[in-house]
Image 1 (cartoon, rainbow, N blue to C red):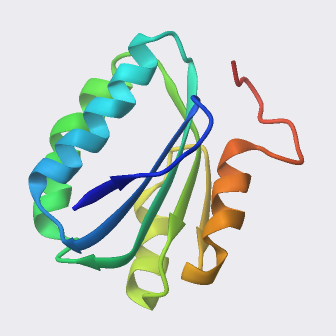
Image 2: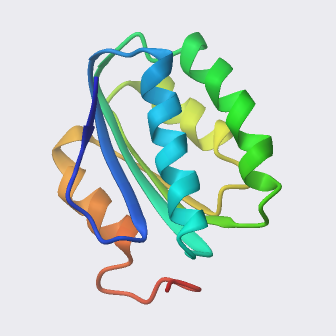
Length: 129
């Protein structure tokens, strides 16, 4: 299940809890596309998967369909913060998010820090609206 989190408009912040479905990925990427269509040239993502079950192949099938579409819009994911304690996902995130701008992986206890970093709080986020 996808749960939306409070965040500035230029930050897509969500938590995946319980069983993850391909529709969760579709909803996330549709929201990202909506932000780009609303005029944001740079959007940051904070995704908490620390309580997700089944975050894997089905998600990536949907992601593969969306990423070329988003890349074709010449828009930018400026920061990507992933929240997880799973060591496999921590390593995979750093490999899989190549080309998405700045990427950082946070532990579950650091969720607020992850959101603040994604939002560029305490520092200027280059190119933000």
